[in-house]
Length: 505
Ligand code: UN1
Image (cartoon, rainbow, N blue to C red; front, side):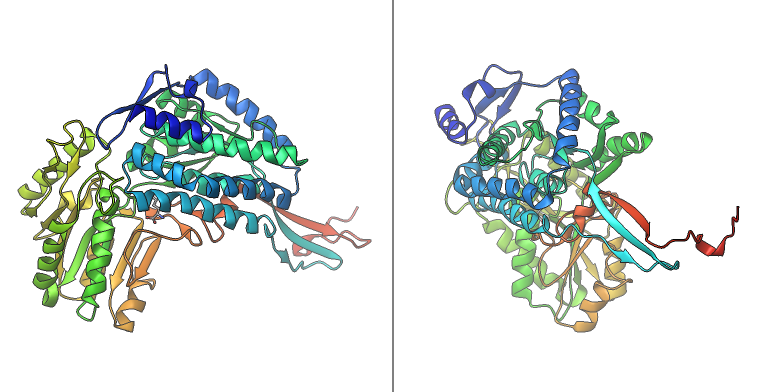
């Protein structure tokens, strides 16, 4: 695999010196093979990077937004040209099946397109003033340095959601990727630098340190999180990580955008199209080997169809093809590492103790891949929503629950501490509308007749409660990357005070 990875990274513009001789060892979850040893930055490197990023911001903020968009457009071109190679690298380093690796890069391309359009519509409001000869308006202005912490499961797309928007908004970026996926980060950075060189060769004035990558561990991340010149920290990962990052950024009155754990449920009602529901649930629960923050972890089924649907899911589950993610036909690739497999086993043991009946969940392909961690997808029939069901385990485990009334189903759906994604399968308009209403799902994402994962970039992405409250990607998520100013302009010859206050001198 080593020669192959070298060729692949070189083709993406990463010199061999960047992934050899370093201290951060990278292993492929496919077979445990060594992929490289990446150089790690120090806390001091991060301080230098923030200073450079801040200087870059001071220049970049004055470049007109549509011209900033041109840089993102060129980056999108690089991604299109190197889609297959980058997708392959995502599969090798993160273990995603090929079509999902390609989907990940497509998501980057999509957000670039979105950001390019957005660069011509970073709009504010005009507001009626109570005073004659006055005008009020709001402007959105560049914010500063944006620090991006990304997770292994979407090693490049989630960075792109943040950086494409931040760049058109006039910000500079620093990226601290997951320690499990530094190679995809290096490749993405190389493609970005290529776009930046083309942009400047064509007369653009993008600062060289506009978007920097620093691989490294906790000390590097913490330095970024605590640095007063990092205006926004956008962090994707576990709730545990968010609990550490959020208060530190808040303590210095920085801005935080958190996209943390999910515990996403699908409700299936008696009128549902079961064919659709089965497909939606299987992809949601077991796609990406259960390692999406939007993964379907619970299915809440009406008692009248419960046994039939669970039996169908169980049969289909057992037939999903597990294997190397780069082999054609594979639907379920490996878990990211041994610790992840162990966490899965612990959750299944807890589920059994709490009355669950477990199918699947065993280690798979151990003789073929002794140094990798494949698992058969697990389905757990739970008698009630016990503690383990309320906990996010980043693995292919689906808990099934039974309900009698829709109110009860919605209460179960909302009972967990996380609030990212949710869905209902129904053909009853009353049920569908109730689910997306004020008294329905409490999540940031609430879908009808599609699963919980696989969102498009056009919508705002994120969730409530322990998911952290942030919104990334589409809609008006860009506003998080800008500072809002309210301007009152007096074009009259007098100076009336608001609220009729008098101050005659
Ligand atoms: C994540 O798992 O962190 O909606 C992001 C989805 C993807 C993004 C998931 N578009 O499943």
